[in-house]
Image (cartoon, rainbow, N blue to C red; front, top):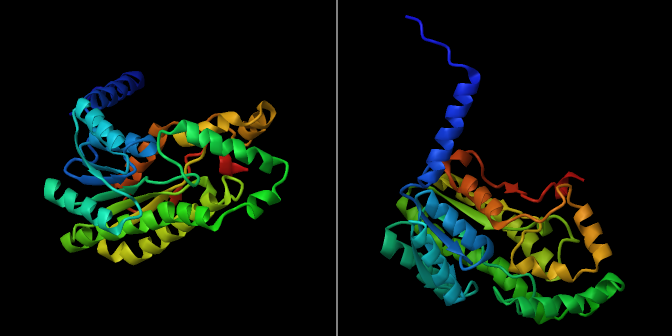
Length: 304
């Protein structure tokens, strides 16, 4: 029996239409039946990831220290037709992190995915507080002309605060969520949010670059320790993404801003959805042979 050959353009059109139809009805449901816990889910990368995961069928636990923002994310997920719940969580509290894991188990019966998006760029950072961030960045402008002062002016307490939230917070969330993952014996996926600062010292202030490089090393170590339990651990190292955290870049003088974007071959900041899509890949079975890796959605920053 012979079959008619379809013209290539017809097949291409069918494939495109099929893909668009799948997206229109909630995507390909790559996380159907999975439960995802997302720290820092009230804003920025965490919020985008929560919405993206829910659109792919996951039940999402949104954890954040700012209750209003976390609840807002849950409402957005619900409006999109997804399932999510909120729990207050201070990233540096072991008790809060264990309560977060317990919340996921009580409400959804499992934890399959953890994304650690809670983090700060500087001491005193508060998600959504643009004014505070802009004031902090204004103080840093002098460092462009006098680089040594960044080191000499650094307060130990400020250093410790950023390290605690970014590094300790990642560790505590992992410890709380890995325990039920290991007990269930079904494997899982952890996605940590590092930064291009994990590898490049000029991508942020001292506490930030130190904390993110430590998150990257913690990711690799956890990947080694958890591989035999079927739990994959990978990191995302975003470039400059258009969030509240990077709003302060607008204070840079125009000539320096031009130079700043000249270091990014694509010539623009990224958007949160581009990070959420990367997290989706790493959390899904499509990345089944990835562990201990870091992906850099950075517009080509590391091609130089």
